[in-house]
Length: 552
Image 1 (spheres, rainbow, N blue to C red):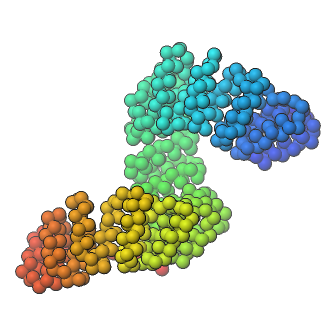
Image 2 (cartoon, rainbow, N blue to C red):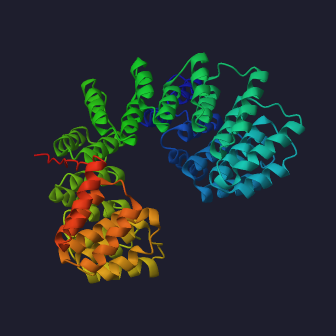
Image 3 (cartoon, rainbow, N blue to C red):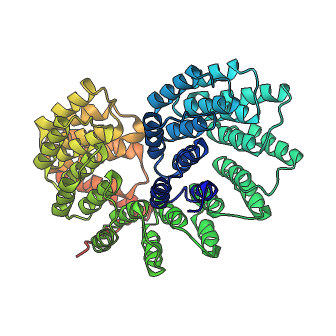
């Protein structure tokens, strides 16, 4: 190191490499070059932009305790940026207090930084109070308060109102203003306003600006106007991975995954974000086999997967019950040291459970350091669907002991466990607790589980009564369940009533007539059996063969 100017240059170009930053800091201290305010400010600014902004705060604390130098107006904007990135409101307020104490609170750069810090920490009233109290405002001030409103979901509409005030005051918008406004329009679904912003951009000559073009792409994609996305994408100058990701995700959201794949295949250099978008797209549109094939291609091209990749791929394995592929993914995770966060762990538990490997599901569950309600629900669902009702309820009790509040999906799993294992008392108890204690309104899935539970237990009158509380359009499956129970328990009286209801609900269903034929056979009503078969023949309704497979 030859002098302070080189120090400033090195810090400026090393903000994304924390190891390199630490090495430069150590050399700076060793060389005795850390004795000026500009050097301190450069160090704090570099750490504030780095992956470890907490280091900027720690450097400031050390600076205040160990140096005779005092921070100046260039110190605090970087510090407040670090507070914003860390969402550290207490430290931000502490710095604000110090700024007021030393008389720097009228500095426009510090005021802008305070507005931004309060905005990202969801203190919109403090941001607006500072904004309204400023005697001088520049475009950064307006952009800071607009961004503060957009960062707060309840206040995003105010950003559009405030922009109108900005125009009335004669303040000239810049590219950042346009990006902020398009973000607000995207969140609000304000298609008309967003198009007006686009027209404004063209009038101001804001063309071939990558960040702005990407914001426009995101706005039109979110508005499902893919024709506009296609036109804009075609006219763009430079494109980056963000541009391609927005377009691919836009087509995927509309279910046009084949169009997305065509674009994906034309991209010469793809990063992990693009691979993840395409793989998750196949999973979203329920084409899991293609998701696995694309992941295999990704592996062949030596692209290292991340946590998001494996979550999508494990979901595809779950949908296909492909245990062998799921185990291979798990091995890859170990090989490249994928972090076992709650999302990855839950996806693994779900995959093993749905593929029938309950031992692996439970083992993975217990290895997880942190489990949320989705993790608990995944293991309960796996046990419930495999007929291990008592074990599922045991996990449910453990979950409540851990203080995890169950969701409506968790209760579907619990009631399924009771139904599949014939636990009538337990099922009715937890249904009552769900409604009375957890205040969860029963949905058709919950009622279906209870109806199935009562039907399997031979409590046919109670099951029939519960079906009457369900809307007509949702009764078909429940009536089929009840009629099967009537056949099992030879209850001709209730069965005849259910049979009539089924014909009323769906006179074209082959499954209904097959079930009715079986019921009338049990009842010895052979004329009705012949009638059912005649109707089936007339409608050419042939019973479809079932398909099942197990991965060995």
